[in-house]
Image (cartoon, rainbow, N blue to C red; front, top):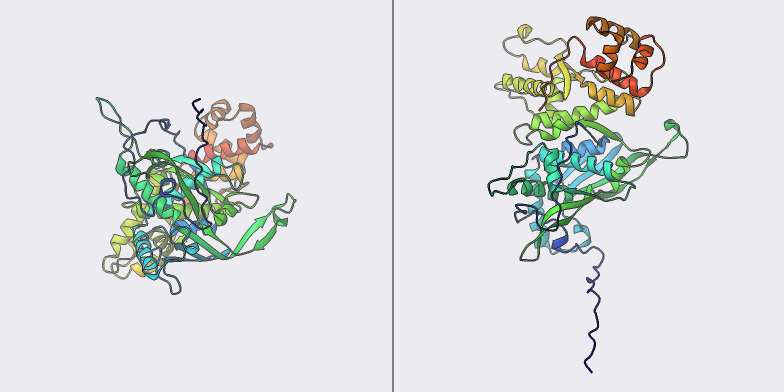
Length: 469
């Protein structure tokens, strides 16, 4: 009798020893060497272009801001005691280092020549860092905050969605041509993800909040402990298999490492809101705009509780955070570039306005004005949407400089615009009853107050025209 064939169960992949990296087809290379797919391969749904977001929730902790501000060619340097590039973290609530090194490297004893080769490769990566990595960090944080249901949750994102968040437009198909993003655009994003995957946080001293079961924030217990781990754990989970068995990554799965998860999840989480237009700035030609906008978004979150958004900043601080250096031979070039940076942020609605507190070029001496200019103070007003967000979601205070009661400001603005209460309530997107109560000085729900404050801010007499990209 013929033997009945016995069905065999699928062969299970061999178990990996602890510390052994995943096979190449399941992870990103240290530096991607192959071009990603030119179009969506069979078996994967066509990526859906996300609805453009106006404001994004990202990290706001000092560690997170230090990580973002290190994303430039000089952010990581050689330090004694480490073969890999380091960036120090020396903040009030955290002290430690950010290191650029391959995952699992500490668990794999390597010969000296191989370790030296990896060190050289990491220093080459450090020189390629730019605000593109900062864009990607913010995008990953925003997507994880939206998708995560618990602190260990993994989020999934298409490469095309990351490109869309940067404001890049896919190429239209037709006449037999394939549409979508260019392979070079996807490859650039894969390089950015690979470099982010190599970021390692080692925080020796850390301050966080833990829930002690009480509602009052002031009674949460403050703890200090040392933690270490990758900034993000990133793994390729979808794409097109090549003939050599590798994978052109099309979709990635990721989760924040232990350090960032302390800030992005839980009762003590520290998140801020940033304008989505920041991610759309060119990471190379608009580096000052990208860097300064992120610094301001972090600063406004810190100041939101007391409403001191417009507290002046020194010109030297703005230059430092914009990555601009004073041209001692032609300081006017530096001044013009900084003022152009602020004008761009104002034009795009990232900030509402800016002005010097007292400095004027007309009153400055013809020579020797650069040093006094560095000490000059600049007042930067946040966009109305930023103030509105913190009023509604974080119980932020009103900006200083607006001491008049809400009722008085509503009445004065409505009369200046020659509107009825019905017209004003419609313009502010609240009911007429709610508007009437507010103008009479009665109690107003937090959501309606936020809308009214936003309407007032957008109708101030000195409000600039905002050009939407």
